[in-house]
Image (cartoon, rainbow, N blue to C red):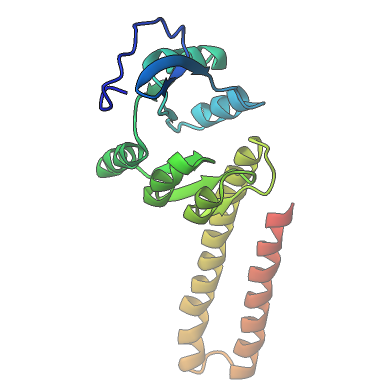
Length: 210
């Protein structure tokens, strides 16, 4: 508005984001906008905090609107950054990464796309914008925030099972290969044990479904 020489009177935003309207170079009015809290958002943020992870709300809304939003969540000490552009969101992610943090960005809007691409893991909500979905590594197929807790639990369990499988696979090779090479174990017996080792890895991997 200022760039176009349109005078905007001062007003109290009362915790809203304000869009000004100008017609033919004259100020005509304001539109107040406010975000709604997604269902189960507080529960998901509480889960993140209990797991020892840090959560930060990054929004393009003004400070008053951001504080109003944080107040609705009802989580003490929740950090936020307000009045940021889409590219500033990405810069904030880089700042956390520069401190050796692994950053997960969750978003569903056009403004979230740069940060989703920059983050170590970008997570888009299933009904989000196309550009947010394309910019993400993971897409939640349903518009349900509790799926984030399922995603985290499944990822942790999968990584644990991968490590277990590597342990069993390397243990077999470290023990059995030298025995087979030196002739202490018959090659046929070694081949049979190799099959058993592979089956152990497969059955252990199936535990992810539980």
